[in-house]
Image 1 (cartoon, rainbow, N blue to C red):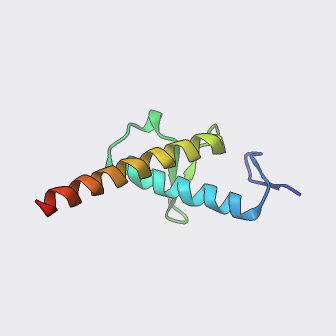
Image 2 (cartoon, one colour):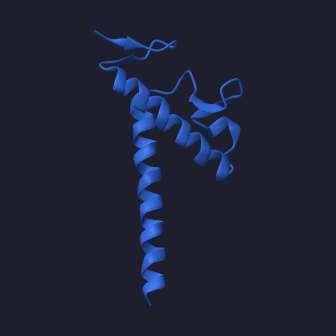
Length: 87
């Protein structure tokens, strides 16, 4: 059985679908904080629920790739900050 969102993206489990939208929300917050131009964003703000959701043309693979890139950057930044504090 597949779970399908309103844009026709298929997910094998409900957890995958939930993770997709949670990652998109975190990416949206990151995009806003880093002032990514609207045309380059993978997400848009849904004011009714106060969350960021993926654009209709974005595939789950793109969200996962961007999410891992952002978490890697944050980890490296935190690691560098920790090393500076230890000096």
